[in-house]
Image 1: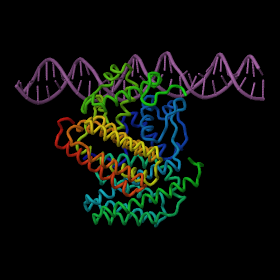
Image 2: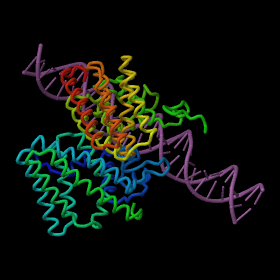
Image 3: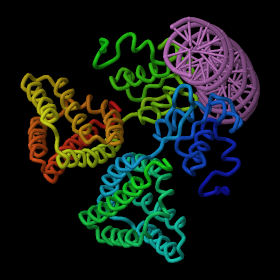
Image 4: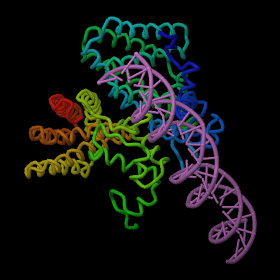
Length: 233
Length: 233
DNA sequence: CTCTGAATTTATGCATACATTAACAAACGC
DNA sequence: GCGTTTGTTAATGTATGCATAAATTCAGAG
């Protein structure tokens, strides 16, 4: 096997990508990292200059971002990074809660291999370690991996794609509120319980546990965003 | 109020739409109506000629269709209308079942106005009438309206958008199997029961009824597609 | 007859040109 | 001063040109 980097893209990989694809990834990255904050506007020409390409691939990237629900294209004002209000977060979490609870049930009913279970356990372990060392960024990354893995284990690609899209929409707001909320100790407990339910192939319990887990997280985020008002978003 | 047509697009409306938007709608329409059957390929130039515009707006439309999950863009072969296999249908219905069951519960808990409830009842009535007069196309249209209205009543726009997208992916296969399955008498009963549960604001029952309803429909479609093999798709 | 490889065709990806029209600003009338 | 109107600017939507690279075809060797 040639030396293939497992994640991200190597230089040569990036090279062979189309400009439109590079533009899409670059812009999405800027947005998800809050480097282009909510409300920012970016003209096609500006983006083209910034990324060193012509307007055409930029337009194509913007169209995709608009369908992803992270920007809005306003005919004479370029693309505008969409703010995520408390109401938006409510919508997103209502759907995420439904889908991930279903995912948990599906995975529990179907059963998982020892390695797959270990993957979930590893993520939980990382979350506990991160929490012990007070590293919230690491915790968020591990939490994200856990949820991502759970959904992946369903094998349902549409489910994966939709959950990813919604998670990305919520990502910026989640990052901004990461340090404003109580330490997620309950979260780790929930995840451990879910892993047990999956190991026991108890679909009923898995659904209930994960449903409560996501509902709690959603309520907290919505309340936080509400209390923040629209200072950030 | 100026004479605004309530649905569809008037001539002048169509006129003021961008070519890219017209291309998107036209192509999507061709696909959903099976005029471009699954597996069809269409080059940019062909589509441009067909719709009387240049390749640029066609490209933009194709990009959107690809993100909608109805076509695949294959670099030297134009766009290809994606087939919907039994496994795809399984994926789609698993997600739809989860989301619509949640929608039913949300709507029941929230409660609906008399007019909204009547809208649901009207759709059920149309389905019964269509079934009585053996008009399956009308039945399918009314069924679609019922499900659409149910989701709309949640007020969750993201939920609506996702359900619409999945329904569109499933639409062609559903149409093809419409006449191959037993008459949907149970379906009408399910809908009537759901309406009652919503009227009674019984979220629990609403979820259960609609979950079973969608699960049944999904199983039937998957079995049908399986038995068809890949003749059509 | 089959397989290989080179030449040709052609669809695409991107850049660029251009017309359109919305946003902005300045000037004018009230 | 203030509202209106007109003129200007500039961002977009679409068309088009062009280089690239993939697919196909055809020829020739085995």
